[in-house]
Every structure is written in C-alpha cells, then in structure tokens.
Image (cartoon, helix red, strand yellow):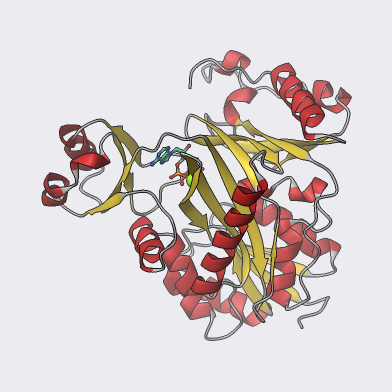
Length: 386
Ligand SMILES: Nc1ncnc2c1ncn2[C@@H]1O[C@H](COP(=O)(O)OP(=O)(O)OP(=O)(O)O)[C@@H](O)[C@H]1O
Ligand SMILES: [Mg+2]
C-alpha cells in the first residue's frame, strides 16, 4: 500500500483531476498535476503543478522522481507517456487499457473481439471503406477515431454521399461509421477495479444529452432491475478484459430494450459526479484507493441523486456569447433543498465548456428530479433547440 503522506501523480488538470486532488488531499496525500495549461482546474489545487506538455520528458522524469504512483484524468494522454512513466513507478490504468479507450477503432474492435454488445459499425480509413459500407448502417454517425469529446469530431450522415463529404471534412482522419440507433435512453456504469482484481461498481446512472454533451444524470437509472444488473455485468467484463486498474466509465445505449456499449472512459466519468454527494465513497476516492492499493470503498448510494452540468453559455446573458461574461445567480440554486454546487474555477466561459455542476440529493428520485429540473431552469438553463 502507498500510504500518506506519499505524493501521487495526475496526468491532466481538468475538473476530473481537480476532484481527484480534493479526494487525495482529504486522505492525506500530496498530488502533483501535469497539464500544459497554467490555469488548469486541478493544477491550481495541486501541491506542484508541472506546466508542461504530455510528451515533455524532462517533466515526466520529475514526475517519476517525485511521485509514488501516477494516474490520469485525460484519456488523450499519449500511451507512450504512460509506458515511459511505468518504467519507474506504478501507472494505473495501464498504457494498454488507455490506448484501447482513446481510439474508437481499437475500442470497437475490442468490443467485437470480446463478444460485448455494441452497435453496428464500419472502420473508415479511406473513401473505399465508405463505398463498401453496409447500406443498413445509414442513417449513421461518422466519428473521428481519436481526440473527439463532447460530440466534437462527429457528423450525422443520412447517406453514403454525406458520409464521404464529412470524412473529407475531417481531412480523411481514420473514423468509425456507426449506425444511428434509436435510443430508449442512455445509461452508464462507473466502477473501480483494484490491482488484485476486486471490483466495486456504482449503480448505473441515466444520462440525458443536449447538443451531444451530457446535460443531466439521474441516479440510479430508472430502468428495470435486469437491465441495470446486465449493465453492471458488461462493465465488469470490460474491466476484467482490459486488465483495468482504477476508475472506469462505460457508456451504454439502450435501444429496443437492449444494451449496447457506446464507449469507455479510462478515468472517472462526468456521469459519476453525483457519487461525491450521494455515495458512501466517490468515484474519485476509488481512483485514489485503486492507485494506492488501499481496499476499495463501499460504492452504495445513500440517496437518489440528479446531477446537472453547468456549461459555459450560462455565463452569458441569454446564452449569447457576444455579451459580457457574467456570473450566474447562484443564490437560486442554494435556496433549493438538497442542492450542492460544484464550480471548477475556470475563468473563461465558452459555449459547451464544462464550468461546474450541481447535484441534488433527497428521499425519492421523483422528488429529486423535480427539484433539479426546477433549479436548472431557475439558474437560467433554457431548452431552446436540441
Ligand atoms: N450511434 C449512435 N446512435 C445514437 N445516438 C448516438 C450515437 N452516437 C452518439 N450518439 C449520441 O451522441 C452522444 C455523444 O456521443 P459519444 O459518446 O460518441 O461522443 P463523445 O464525443 O465521446 O462524447 P462524451 O465525451 O460526452 O462522452 C451520445 O451520448 C448519444 O446521445
Ligand atoms: Mg460519450
């Protein structure tokens, strides 16, 4: 076991890293964050912020010398960086697991090879692959294999012609072409797996997206018990097959009553934010525990919860980013019972940028959802278009 006051390393300085730093500090650890942005949310809380690129080997050497173990919050950290650090200190999750999750072609291939349910897709590396794609895939979504997030690097395409046009728009980058599924709903499972192979999964959450970005998570998901159990089992199988150590997020589509894995995130997940306020152990504390070989904590939810993301547009009057940036009126949120606001300390708001979130907990999921949606409207989130 790596015990306090050891220093832990975190690759990536976003909000997921920031919550990890908070959890680690609570537990008595120091944390060094590596992120090129001098104002990164996690970097600002860290004991040491290495302001450097992910392939800056001088900075990586410093991290290896100063930290007892290292983890990541950013799935696009180069696998080579993780491999390099692993020569000196434990790196969890492994470069191999992260490499699969950060490339949609590798990810989909992994799912197919392991017989894990996923939607129909084709790998697109050139115009020929589009010409050869099964007609039944359309209408479809074309997604770049690497560096997409929050719906970026994606195009909805009705036909082969549109797919070709979108592919050229992505400069011929390798892509996957996915059949557009009609969704009953979306759910996700966040779990932690330790180095000994023990797994602790949180109850599935139900996710609502808006403009390709997570908007609301309702936990536990309002799906039948069999589906919920099955989602947990599939997520566990993925963790085992990846040899995963750490906190893992698995996103699912529910279509025609059946589960299909959408994608995996080799880190804590946005849909697991509520675990801070609604579970005995948060997904971030689990990440600390898995990294340091402490026994994993109890994932049980003590309250139903609804999490609402606060995106950059909320910092502009009427969502119009030509106006001056101003702070939303948080007093309306604090007046709602059972509400906890989390802000990430990002100074510049942008359309779609995740600036914070709030979680509502209470006695029943219906009551909590009602309060959360009322608070969401009151703070100024409007449902104009989708
Ligand atoms: N094949 C599909 N069929 C139906 N809906 C889809 C499909 N692919 C994506 N979507 C919708 O778009 C959302 C974002 O897609 P995806 O998870 O692939 O993107 P992402 O950029 O990785 O987003 P994030 O980082 O927020 O998870 C999905 O959660 C879903 O609502
Ligand atoms: Mg996603």
